[in-house]
Amino acid sequence: MPKAATKPVLSVYDAMEDLREATIKSTSTPGVADAARRAIDRLNELYAEDRAAFTAEDVRFANVLRGMLGSRLAAHGPKVVHVRKLKRKGDKLDHCWRCKTPVDERFTDNCPTCSAKEYTWRVCPVCCACGCQRAGTVLI
Ligand SMILES: [Zn+2]
Ligand SMILES: [Zn+2]
Image 1: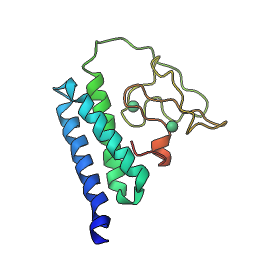
Image 2: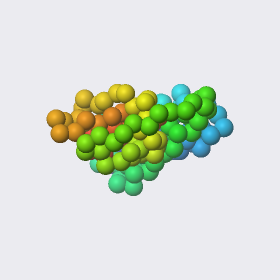
Image 3: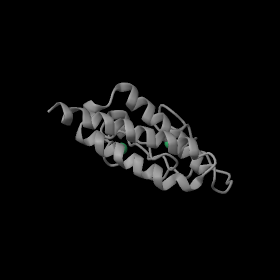
Image 4: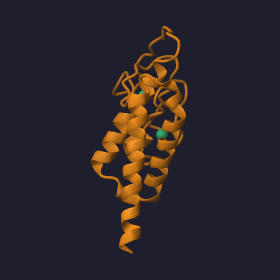
């Protein structure tokens, strides 16, 4: 029993390390995106299995890394001038809460999972954040 209980914790640690490494490399190495994707998927799986294996700090840090990763990978793309979108009713921010990308014409997708009649969450095109992470439905 104790062995089984410690395993998820180690897996969380390993997956967090993989994401951290990928985020560090993402400034110089766009090719790290695949490894990053695997670490993100793994972390989300672990979170879905047992969210108690994650401390509040894990959750916070994983989201910080995910935001940085998105911005850094996007920075490798061509430089394009984006058109800002006006704040909608209910929008508290004019940028992505996680990666700070200003809301612009690329923010076209809404998330059906975390949106309600009162408020529609957009999905950030840079880091894929919506309201699901804020609500704790998914980790990152
Ligand atoms: Zn974002
Ligand atoms: Zn969502």
